[in-house]
Image 1 (cartoon, rainbow, N blue to C red):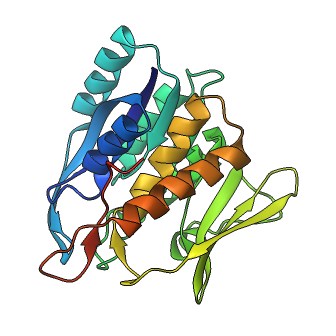
Image 2: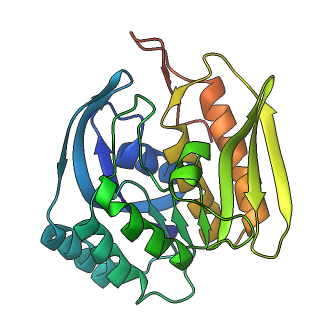
Length: 243
């Protein structure tokens, strides 16, 4: 079983963040360990509050995890502020030949900010340390991703949405690959981005190349969406058990 290090925030409703990440790891038969960056009070209707952990406690979590476990892939989600990003950068720079997936979480679907404005430049500095990043279109625009000079392989989510939802993989070697799946109603699913990036990390840990990791991860997410759970607010929660 491969060990995945998840560095991300907590989602109180359990559909995104580390909760979704751990469910995804389990479904794909990987072991997930977590270094929590922030606690959020949220549900599918929005984020009411965010409390970041200290840089010291994030560093301590990472030390305790890596002291005990051999890590086979890393997934990074919500980082929130510059201090936490500096800690993550320090740890990533010590790592060699481990797949790193960064989901550059900036804004929740509800519009709530999950990254402080002053932390944007710091986030951009760690992108070249990744094997692949998975921004949506808005995040790619915020990060000013240059498709002619990529920091790493880049999967931009929701590049085209009509009867199908298309994600586009831009590889550093210039290859461009489109992945389209049927667009299911409702169009917004809580936690789909977190789930996709973690599934990619799991498949990279299991020796898939980037293209196959994306294909397999998208199949998993589609299945989880097809079996999603209804909520009071109409936005559905993925069924992560459906691997």
